[in-house]
Image (cartoon, one colour):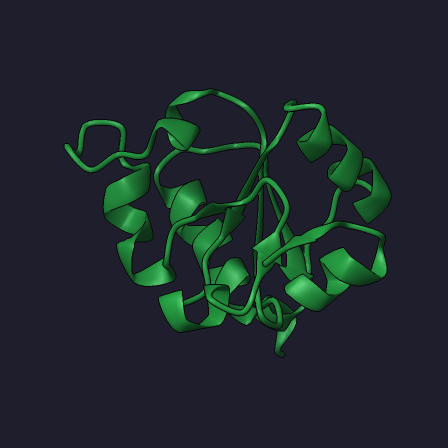
Length: 116
């Protein structure tokens, strides 16, 4: 019933962390500005969920360069719920290789670095 809360990882998180570090995958933090002030995953691009639709639409003037790269995308938030919503938004926009890794805590537990 609450499947939207579960991360949708197609690869082990350690592999995703490695791909982000190598620049092979785009990592997007969809948390609010106040949450990011406390730290974010190393290498993540911050795009608040409320701005995702505009910033991920290629024809929109506010489209972020990270979404134009054609790289696979990994998303996270605090728990995985908002990143699940973000994955659905990106799917509706035509993005095909999108992974919800859950929350920032999942990233850190798997060995991902945190920037402060």
